[in-house]
Amino acid sequence: MIEETLSEATGKMDKAVEVAKEDFATVRTGRANASLFSKVMVNYYGAPTPLQQLASFQNPEARTLLITPFDRAALSDIERALRDSDLGANPSNDGNVIRVVLPELTEERRKEYVKLVRAKAEDAKISIRNIRRKAKDGIDKFVKDGDAGEDEGSRAEKELDAQTKAHADNIDELLKRKESELLEV
Image (cartoon, rainbow, N blue to C red):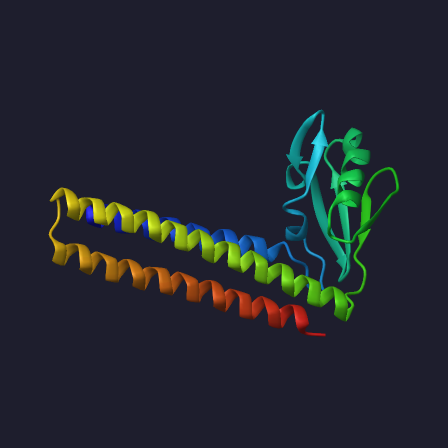
């Protein structure tokens, strides 16, 4: 029972780290890439649809991205969604493709992105701590109900704390890498 609780908590913590990694990828650095637009939702025939499902992406230059919709009727909806997003992009529509030229990152904008990345990292750490708390409650319940001994419970808590620290350190490492990437000129 305790082993199942520990392995479930570890799996959830791994997932939290993956989500943090994906969130970090959506924060832009100096170069345009398709992952920047992974969180952009387009109102497509009344349903919010991820942009990745509606168009293909090409990267002809470092700060330019060409977005070619699979359905030309969605062109104006995609353009509106890009304009409303918080990416600071100014899309231009030529009737066939949407050209997005991302502005040069200023020092002020880079610092804003660092703050955003730190907030995302803290959210991921909070998620990991919540997973730890839930698993610890489960372990305490097993010990209280007599399904496991106190020694086994304390050993499981130590293992849980080690997993929590390892995953939090992993997020800190990802944060440090992303910060240096953002501040690099």
